[in-house]
Amino acid sequence: MTDAIHIDVPHTDAALAVIALSGEFDSAAAPAVRTRALELIAAGHADLVADLSGVTFCDSSGLGALVGIWRCAKDADGSLTLAAIPDRLSRLLSVTGMDTFLPAYPSAEAALAARQGNRTTV
Image 1 (cartoon, helix red, strand yellow):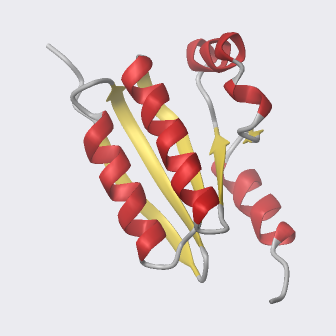
Image 2 (cartoon, rainbow, N blue to C red):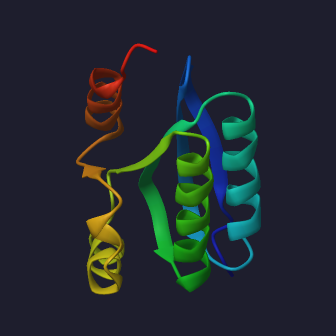
């Protein structure tokens, strides 16, 4: 039996939103995660923080969803920042080279503070 993904949005503020994931980030979950993230971007929250502290498993579909979300955020002049990455997922991001373009922080709070500090006035 799989641990179904749970998607929560504990914080939204201007262009910034936190999307918190828990459970298995696999081929069954990736479309829902991507859809929710793209809804946030379309609603004007182009700077996303993905809190991965509750992710128990991630496969290539989950990684693909992260890349797709990153691209959509970038196209909207935003960003994707990762937070609280579990050890196994951190190694996977490193092996695939995704850690070179997806900034990461030890907690959602740290990522949120860093993203808020990086905002520029338009």
